[in-house]
Length: 248
Image (cartoon, rainbow, N blue to C red; front, side, top):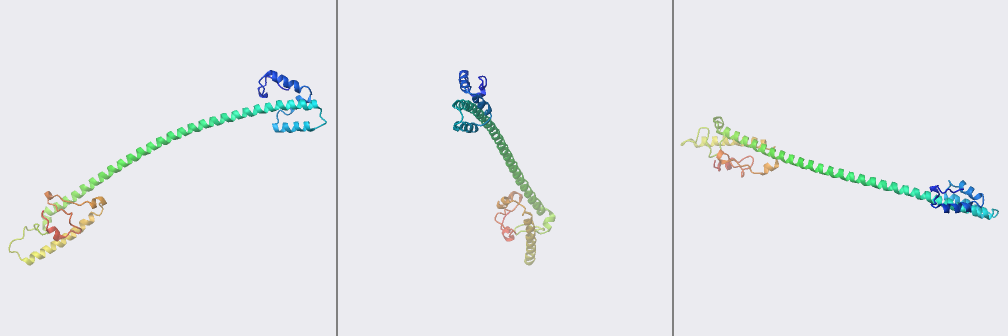
């Protein structure tokens, strides 16, 4: 018996069908032999052999019929094998698709976490930068205020008054000009004080070159309560004649 009913790889599900095909192949010994000899070949090779047998006029009709039934049984076996291979391929592709979907979900989750982390780091860096800029501005303002206080203290001290850094309208080291003083001597002293004042203000200008562009654009105003000069209308170096018109 070439076909066995208990063999699931034969492609047949019913035992009576298997028995009928075995009966047809058994009419000649070449039928079962043809089935067993070609069971490991491809369908194209089996079909070529069957064609050779059918085209040979010397082969008896019983042999041709038995080999034809054997070819039918082999065709069902090959079809069943191809179906199993196709099912395995489909299952493999489905598993691969599930794996890709899982990987895509993991990557999307990781990307979202990374994006949120980068946004948090960016916001934190921006906040720290703003704090640093604010602190820098406050430090620069305190520095400028200390400079002006120091300058005011130098002007108010006896040593500063003796240096005769005087603007018209300010008191000199010896107090106000006394009545009856020589006019020429007064002009010479005033001119010398003006030159010294201009040189001092040039030095002061160089100290402020490191200030930020924002602070340079803002006008500097000294409180009148401290005896400072409002300098928003003065340019570097300060014009001594313009400063003379300002009241402390």
